[in-house]
Length: 191
Image 1 (tube, rainbow, N blue to C red):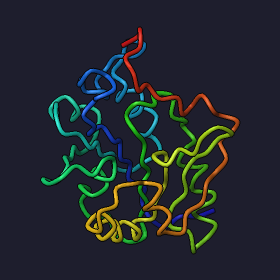
Image 2 (cartoon, one colour):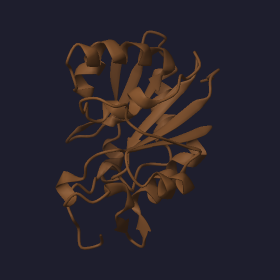
Image 3 (cartoon, rainbow, N blue to C red):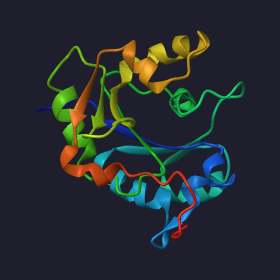
């Protein structure tokens, strides 16, 4: 399998933290480090450029990525706001997306998703799934599909799954790594 484009990484850390008492979830500590640090350490070797989408604490997040971006003004659109805020990614490049609250994200996520995405020219996006869930925010996208995002949002839609349904998307089986997608959506004793 050969790819011609760069892989850009995006960590989504722009949420309001409503499930963790309004705290900035990416900066909550888990096992002695902020959640975002765990994710960034896993993603950094998998990507050429690393972005973090956050709407507060930008100075702190800068130490974990090459670039920090924030949502555009307007009504909230959920996790798709982070993708919308990205600067243009060149044609032929890829975007590896993960949320900030999955500190065990696999070091092979990008490679395994690329095995499927790179093998089928018709596909626009691949995302992880295991025997329990589909993990739509653990995904690899071709840069060209990002052009359709604005129209999808302007039409009033907000669902990541719904946007993928407008694209050629495929799930990639990670049933051998179910724990890798465990997310910390509530205050934990380690936080």
